[in-house]
Image (cartoon, rainbow, N blue to C red; front, side, top):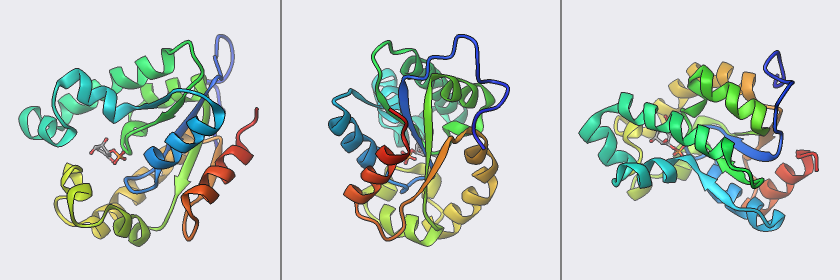
Length: 183
Ligand code: S3P
């Protein structure tokens, strides 16, 4: 897992990066980690939404997933390039592109927040949380199971550490992340 040939010269390891599927808690946990570390919090979905002037769901509907992924790559590059050490929460699919994996690995310490699909599905629920996530339109549990299977290799490849979030409170997950994060 984690560091491979991408590691090395010129790498700036300053950021704490959270990856994982929708519902893993990247935004909630990342925000709390940033508070505890006294750092800025950056969410790649927020960067995309600001740049696009619309929500992720609207961007998918208006311009398609391809445009969203292109903007997500720019957001990952911008977040990684920040000179101030930050906590970066990545959209669940950001790890799919090799450029993003390479950037994330070389700009920080990457933690994969894990949970079984049914736990993730419970967290994203059926209301606004789900409406804001266009990929879940077909039903959260089965989609998250499929995405988990497809993406596991990418999460594994990029992660320096894995934190299990099942049955843990936000505070407990924050504590576990900060425990594995070398400071
Ligand atoms: C996506 C996850 C979402 C968002 C978009 C696509 C994915 O972010 O980037 O809806 O492909 O898994 P969160 O993981 O923060 O929900």
